[in-house]
Amino acid sequence: MGRDSGAGEVNALPRADELGLIGCPVCGLVCRNVAGDKRLDGDGVDDAMACPRCNTALQRRKPNSYMRTWALLIAAFFLYIPANLLPIMRTASLNTIDDNTIISGVVELWVKGSPGLAIIVFTASIVVPMLKFLALSMLLVTSQRGSGWARLQRAKLFRLVEFIGYWSMLDVFVVALLTALVRFSVLSRVEPLPGVIFFGLAVVLTMLASMSFDPRLIWDGRDTDD
Amino acid sequence: MTKASPASLLICKHCDTVYRRRLLVRGEVARCARCKAELERHHPLSVNSLLALLLTAMIVFMQANIWPIVTLGLNGQYSATTLWGMIITMWQQDAQVVSVLAACTLFFFPMAKMLMMGWLLWFARRGRRAPGFVPLMVGLHRIGPWTMSEVFVLGALVAVVKAHTYFEVTADPGIYAYAVLTLLITIFSGVDLRLLWDETAGPVK
Image: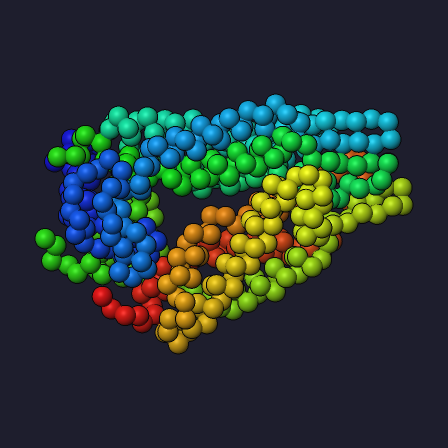
């Protein structure tokens, strides 16, 4: 069968698709694939079966996984640009108005003596979203080409992206909480600025993008498709 | 095709590999040999202890929402906020998107999740499927990734540190309730509610 990934035992593991089985994405029930067509492209066409236990539509692969993930990822990226360039928060006091971007907020934390938190915020707001854009693009390109390269590492990378994705919402909550707290009439006020809205939406879209990617596609390439 | 009945099989949702299911002993985690994803883990907690923990989480969640989270002081003036105070302020400040996001991920979804779980577990104690079992199980699966209380706790910490430079900061009961809630959420995140499909009697297909 497969020529990938070396170890003989791994190649002996049967995949549901080869056995004519489908696992329900919601309840996990193993169902027989009566439609029985051999397409692995994830388009989901005429896979109109429902799980007998939970009624969820059964599809061999998530429908239109590549298209949806690309669309959501590109949309997220276009929101992520203004999210970083526009200020997310305004601090106003008696005679000063200070607009903060995500980066300037991180720098301020660092300078004011909380390098630990600065690193956490930097990770959540910059590293994690960038990692998601790069990782998902790479996963999409390699899977679309049916690459057998580093499958295990790619599978692990996807699970990491899926797991850490929602922590990016951190900065949005920081701005929201500061806005609600710092309300000392003219003395000191914090207001949210449009950047935070773009940022929140970008995070939601990257989460939707990673949910619409089907990790089984990583393992579907030519090498195992006999 | 396969001799085993589908109920005794297990498919890795990450790579589509088929396994024969076997009983796990305490502390055991079954991993996929192909992609190393977790397939199943043994649940040390019984339905009753899950229900007890859930009840605790509900009480703590209520506290977290009622009490102010932190108080800031500036020249003798004080300002405090609750979660809902924050959501309403964001709405008034023309950040409705953020307001709705916060309301859903920090209040409505976590609350819905706990109520749904509680309802399902209450009936599961007697090995029964609660009315509405199927749509509720599907609903729980769908809202799963959209609850963010633990992110909010870290956010509150960052906000406190940022505010600390300019204001006197007093921690209020709400923040402690949130901290406890995060602990409980961590326990629950290891629980795969799919076990309820097997542990409760339903129409056999």
